[in-house]
Image (cartoon, rainbow, N blue to C red; front, top):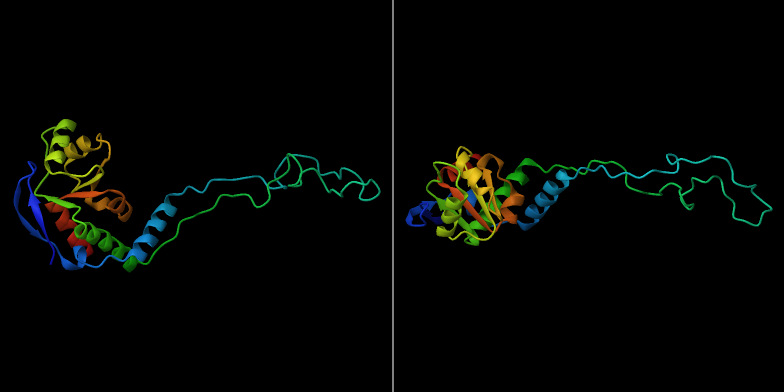
Length: 207
C-alpha cells in the first residue's frame, strides 16, 4: 500500500496518508495510456474540414473542345481536378473522428495515470484547500509553500469555488473538480495537487 505525505496549506507535513493499491499502486500500462490519450484528443476534434469536389465547384459542364483532331488532351469539362478552379480530388470532408474504448480499459488508464504520479513522486496531498475569498496572490503563496511544479493540476471536490477562481488565473496551473479528472490532464501536468477529500472520492469511484 503506497504512502504519501499529508500537508497543510502552509506546506508543513501533518501526517501520512495510505493510498489504495489497486488505484494508486498498480504498474502503469503505457499502451492503454497511449490509446486513451489518442481517444481523448480524437473526441475533441470537430471534423468540419471540407473541400469541394468536381461535382460541387461552379463551372460549365460543357465539353471545352471536341474529343479528337485538335492536338490537345481530351477534356470533359472545366471542373476537372487537373484544371485551375476545378474540384479537389480526395480532399477532406466533414467526418466524425471519435471512437470509444471499453469501460475496463478506461478505468485501467485512469489508475495507470494516478499510479504513475505516485511512482514519480509528483503527487501532493493536502488536508484541505480553502480561501475566504478569491485571492490569486494567496494561492500562489500556497503553491510555493507546497513546492508544486511549474505545471500543476489542482484537484478539489469542486465545492471550493474561491480556490478554483484563484488558481485559474495562474499560468501553468489548472484547477479541476474531482468529477472531471481525466487521463490527459494527469499526464500533461507535471504535479498533481489533490485534497484529501478528492483522494477519497477517486478511490471510491475507481476501486
